[in-house]
Length: 261
Image (cartoon, rainbow, N blue to C red):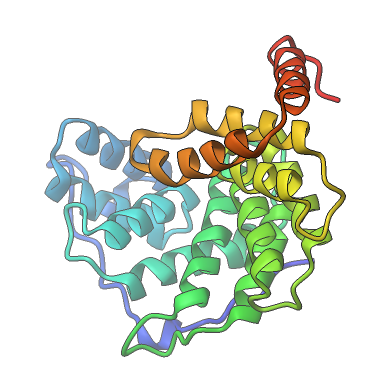
């Protein structure tokens, strides 16, 4: 089933590509060749040179070129920041590659496009036709989480069910999706699942298992995320009994040793 994503192609026109490598004009290169020229220019920091090459490849259906341009416009990296243009590139990837085999290397970029679209639908893009639509956001995360098995999508889908955004609040569904992401090493999912299990937030309380997930999250999170993860961990550790701490350590040792039960 091919996924249909809101099309705003009539509102966004990408101009024709320019000559970009000094020896060949765009119509003399394949999209793959243009993509290679663009990525090589990015590696050497020549973003102005990379842009027309990537645009030519993207206009001719090269999914990774579209993804790179989407990231560049979303972050304002070498181009003026433009969420609408980033959205359109992500939309093109989702429209044309939703049925890609999940086992291919390209699939992770397609899944990431769905996740990016989910975030845009959660918040909307001010002064554009892309309005906040929590239900649509859930659909984007759900597709990437279920078809591609993407851990980021699984985490955000779990948060949607936990917060009741775009769907009725359902802690059991939240725990299911957070658990799938946590087992793949997604630290945010590990932290949220650990807090849920420790407190028993409408799921069976498993304090020791919760401590294990919180410890894994604390060890894996990047420095800029340590504050909120450490807060959850410290709160649980202080409340835990000695027996819960000991069993949590046992679970952690088994996990580190490769036992994923």
